[in-house]
Amino acid sequence: ATRAPSAAKVLSRMSKEKVKDIVPRMKADVVAGIMSSMDKEQVEVLLETVFGGMESPLQVSIQQKLEQINNVNRLLQAKNADMPKIVESVAHIHPIVSSRLLTTIQANKGAHVLAKLAARQQGHEKAADVVDHMNLAAKTYKQLGTRFKDADLKSARMTEDLSKVETEYNLVKLMMYFMEHLKIEYGVGCTVVRSPPDETEAVNSVIK
Image 1 (cartoon, rainbow, N blue to C red):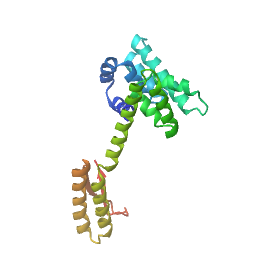
Image 2: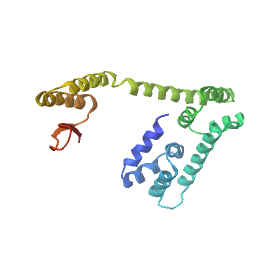
Image 3: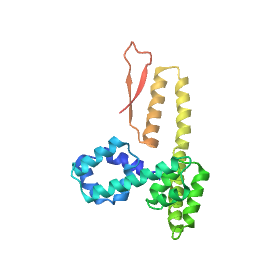
């Protein structure tokens, strides 16, 4: 469920040449799923970059899939939307996209949609795929939340120690240890510079 926003960020950092090379080799529903996490302007820029204003079967398919996804989102967010219509629309979009959209609504409503989807003919497998992607997303969030727990606690202790230092020598010494810790645990490179005399702080940590 987290893949679309992440993929959108990756695409935004690529050169236009790479984007033009990669996107046409992707499936239309995958591209549409990525675009569903973008705003309207970003979608227009991406389409222009890839297709250059020239309409193609792939572009038409992508836009149709994107409209399907947006329609599902509108139905899910509506207070009085017809449940059979919601289930029918969810059944026709990619499970990864469905899992992401279902996490934006109340849990009981999402569970109801999944139950109705599973009850459809050949719908059980689709519902199972959606749940699998939701579980994967939950696992990813948990890993991200606990990955740096020990490092974060150590950072907090070191920051507290730095706040209590009384001499510049010890401040610089502890700062060097702290920067080494940041480099090892987070991959963040830092350096220490002396501030101008008129600055209130004696030492600043500057992110490269």
